[in-house]
Length: 266
Ligand SMILES: C[S@@+](CC[C@H](N)C(=O)[O-])C[C@H]1O[C@@H](n2cnc3c(N)ncnc32)[C@H](O)[C@@H]1O
Image (tube, rainbow, N blue to C red; front, side, top):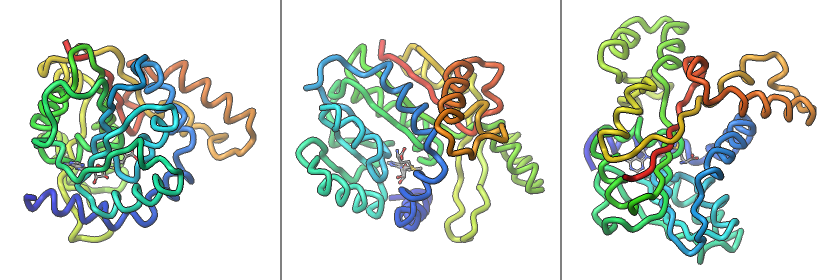
């Protein structure tokens, strides 16, 4: 593992302790929106294999294994994978999910055209240090007509965050290069992330043999409304409805922290 990936993996080892509780606290609506997007593209045949690359603690592998799909979960962080293994075993899903420690940029353990679908949820393309190598690998292991879904950090949102915090040098770095060393609480865990514009992300997919079927922003509206933190189920339902109505509208992409793209292998 190179120096960059050692930092990424150390950060996620550290985060693995609280990742699931952070996620369930702040990302309920985000989760529903992602699930809605994934469900639109799931293969009909449940016997096919789905890759969950950079799958972390297994949030998406669990969702899909419960539906009956056979999952392969990969990650570079041992910490995240330990949590994933514990959860699969508690849920008795071990037989449906194969766990591998593997770098998305170099998945030599997998054959070409092996998976009906590949998920790269929660930004592995932004973190991996070489998104060109990563997408090539993901496309290689997916079958023709198979689906690739990836969520990434949005450049507009990252710029906004850095600007608000007053990180002038980092703002300039991101503007000029599309990547930046994100300031973290723990200095030794600071590493480069790549934050994408929608056009760049679309170009990355198209130039690697994927036709783009959908791009959404996550979240585009709900988190900007004062009602966002309300626990009232009616309000939550309305916010979900708003997200689904507007999240594929390019006018709202700059409002989203993350972009999620769906491509089909030509
Ligand atoms: C924010 S977590 C998302 C986890 C999961 N996909 C989800 O949506 O909850 C990002 C994950 O990407 C993994 N990752 C980063 N770079 C990677 C690489 N080069 N190869 C494989 N996984 C990587 C991290 O270790 C981490 O588990």
